[in-house]
Amino acid sequence: MADLTVLRRPRPAATTAAILLTATILVVLTAPWLCPLDQSAVALDRVAVPPSLPHPGGTDDLGRDVLHRAVYGLRVSLLVGVVAALAATVLGGLVGGIAGLLGGVTDRILMRLVDTLAALPHLLLGIFIVAMLRPGLGAVIVSIGLTHWLSTARIVRSELLTLRTRPFIDAAICGGATRTRVLTRHLLPHVLPKIALATTLMIPHAVWHETSLSFLGLGLPPHLASIGNMINDGQRSLLTGAWWASLVPGLLIVAVTLAIAVLAARWRDHLDPRVRAELDL
Amino acid sequence: MSLVAHGVTAGYRGLTVLRDASFGVAAGETVGLRGPSGCGKSTLVRVLALLHAPDAGHVSLGGVVVSGVRHRVSAALRTRVGVLFQSPRAASDPRLRLADLIAEPLHATGHARAHTRARVAELADRVGLTADLLTRRPHEVSDGQLQRACLARALVHRPAYLLCDEATTMLDASTQAHVAAVIAQEQRRHGTGVLVVSHDAVLLDRWADRVETW
Image (tube, rainbow over all chains, first blue to last red; front, side):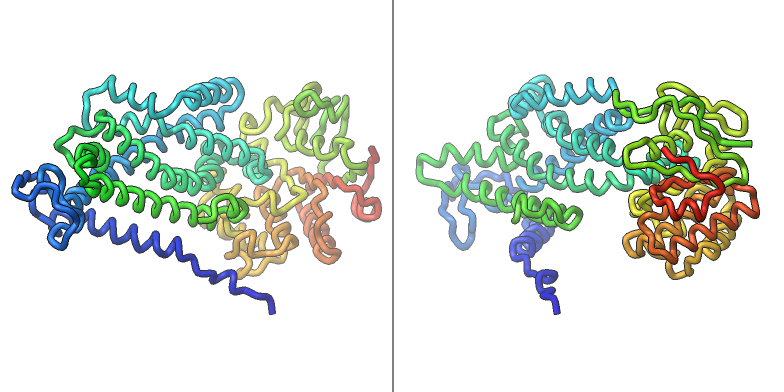
C-alpha cells in the first residue's frame, strides 16, 4: 500500500492561523458590544500603566487602554485593507484584462505603464497620492488602491494570454462561440479564482501600507484609533519605558496579517500544487 | 461542394510552415493527409478550420471565399466545419461536465434547451458515452472517453466537413475503430466530407478514399 498519510498531513501553521483569524474577526466585529466603553476617553489618573490584569495591554500616555484601542484600531486597519485590496483588484483586473484580451499595441503600452509604475517605490507614490487628496479614510484607500493594482494586472494579463492559446478556446470558437461567450464562459471562470487569491494575498500588504501611512502621520486623523496611529503615538512613550504602547498594536497587526498570508498561501497551494515549494508556511 | 485551401501560405511570426499549399475535401469523401512532423499538416487544419489566417491564399467553403478567421467568421459558416483535435484533454474546458461540453456549441448558437438535451442524448448514445459519464468532468474520464465526447461535440452542429487532426493517435485500437465507425456512419447519413490527418499509413489506407502524402 502506498503511504497516503501525506494527504492528511497536519498543517499546524494553517490551523493556528485559521483559529487566530476567526477569533480576531469575531472580536473585531463584536467590539462595540464586547467593550462598549469609549476607547478614546482620556484618563490622566492611570497614565502609562504597564500590562496588568485590568489592562492586559497596559495604558498609553493619555491613560487609554492599549489593547482596547488596538482592537478598534484593527477594525479600521482591516476595513481599509479589505476595501483598498478590492479597489486595487478591480483596477488591476480591468487593466490586465484589457491588455490580455486585446493584446498587440494596447498590451505593450499598458504593460510598459505597469512596469514604469512598478519601478517607483510604492510607499513614496502612496505618500504623494495622499498628499494630493483631502486627508481621511478615503484618501488612504485611494492611495493603496492606486499603488497595489500592478501585480493583479500582471497576473490577469498573463493568465489570459496563456488561456487564449489553449486548444479548448479554439474548440469553443469552432463551436460558434462569440467573443463575449468565450470571455464569460471559458476565460473568466478560470481567471476568477486566481484574482480572488491575489486579492487575499494583497490584504496584508494593504493593511501594512495603511499602517505605514498612519505611522508617518499621513494616514488617518490622529484621534481615530488605527494601528499605525497607535504605533506612532507609542513612540513618545518608548523613551519613558512604556514599551507596550507600540508593541501591543504592532504584534497584533503582525499576527493578523501573517495569519491572512498563511491561509492565502495554503489556498494557493490547493489551487496550484506546482508552486508549493516556493513558500512553505 | 467542397472545403478548399487555395495556394495557402501560412506560418507563425515570421516562420513559414505552409508554402503555396492547395488542398481540399469534397462532400461525401474521406481524404487522408500524411506527412512527417512539422510539415504543416496541423497548420493546414487550422487554416481550414478558420482558426488561423493565411498570409497568402484563401479558403473557400462551398465555393464561397471565406474572409476573416476566428470570431470574424459568422456562426452559420463556422458551424459547417467540425474539428476533432489531437489531444481531447487540451481541447476540453476542464470545468465543464461532458454533457455541457457536448452541448456547448448548441448553447453558443442559441438553440432551445429541449432540442439541446435531445441532441446531446442522441450523440452520446452514438459515440458510446453512458449517462453516468456525461455527468463527469474531463479529469474524471479517460482520454478515449473524452475523445468520444469531443467527437460528439464536433458533430453536434451536423457539420458538412469534419477535420480530424491526428484525432485517433492517442486512442487504443478499439476506441480508434469506434471513432472511425461513428464518423463513417455520419458520412453515410449526411454526406459529410472528412479530412483525416495522420502519420499512420495503415490507418489512412484503411480509412480514406484517397491519401495525399506530403
